[in-house]
Length: 241
Image (tube, rainbow, N blue to C red):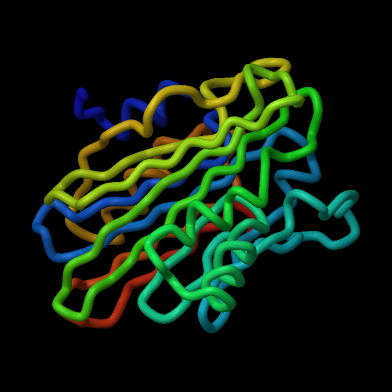
């Protein structure tokens, strides 16, 4: 698989929608997560990210302009023990709750997401994208990504894809809801894109934020976890201030 330039993938696509990047820093010292949201409607653009203890939520920037919270207000990131969960919808809670109730047997991510499907926002039927990182006490980690989507726009069948990775220095995997802009918007297809990653949270945040379409970008969350047991770094950037 080709190693993509994340800057190029973002700057040449006006609307990848919502996106997840997970991988390992170039120097091999950090696990890295990035999650961004974009919007075309007033309702979608009227959002910010807000951190709380053990997670991060979306919320309306201007409550008076919030018309439908059902698919835009959720917890994109939740932490559970030695597990980080990042998604583009309320399936973050589905995954966390499944693990809390059933334990982590190596298949909990897959089992939890088999209870969910794509978003009911016809005609787009936006895919649900999800990621999970498992950290080991000795500093190792591995991660999984998933996408749940309609059958080429046909809502009668949900297609569920899962990908599992052992991390390599400087390599990440990028999955996003839409292939590009359109009407209806075409869903992402193919395997997650393998991308080169920098060393630090600050570098990753700048790389992603600076190359998202200026009109459509809304918020960005970046989290890096030192594999030597150090304190994680989290960065939130909101277009609405």
